Image (cartoon, rainbow, N blue to C red; front, side):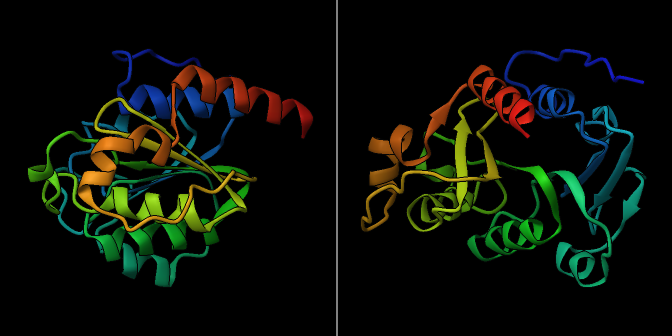
Length: 203
């Protein structure tokens, strides 16, 4: 039975995830960093859902452990993975790289907290260094397609494919502040959905 998406407010991470899941007809979903399942996890309309969080405030279907511990024991692959765990540079990079290993063909990764306007937010408890990981991947990973929706603190879409690499630069907050639209490859949800529809029909 086809899942009908319940639209949240425009730009909401839940709406972004559900919209992508609907157009791609995804059947499995992994969320790294659930914390409060009422905020997002419980509202995701995918048949099979798994969450990971070492210190959640509510019960959820999944694993009460760190993402590193989960990746060490996990045997599943997923269609759609939402990365919103610990926001240090090292952990965000690990979560993305490990997610790529367990991503199904034609799967999608969404990384949260990659867009913000004030440098004071660049601390792990808020947005952290996730943007730096994405910026590096925009410069170093030609085998991936990466685009960032500048809504709900930034939702970066990662898929296998291709991209024109961003020129190598000395990365800094000032560079991000001034050139983030090109650096992060700003896209809209509508543009992402159109791209996915084309890719789904081709495949």
